[in-house]
Amino acid sequence: MLTAVMADAGHPVVAGLLGLGAVGLAAAVVVMAWSVHIHQIRLAEQLARRQFLMTPEAAPAQPP
Image 1 (cartoon, rainbow, N blue to C red):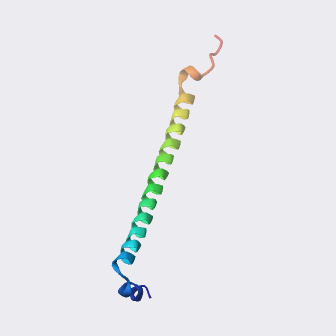
Image 2 (image 1 turned 90 degrees about the vertical axis):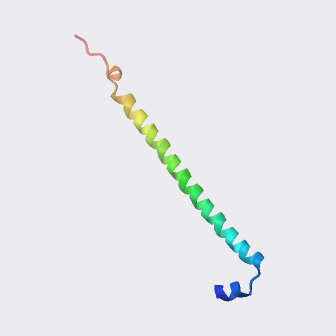
């Protein structure tokens, strides 16, 4: 069915379909990049929290 539509379609219709495909692909790439960015931020927060909790200065002083 799609090939029948494409056979009778003019250049503007084909260009529009290719444009919609390109927009969809670009949106998918942006979503994947944003997801990676969010994961990096969360990982950095976890590592910073762990580093803060593991420092020897954070341990309470023990009486002699």
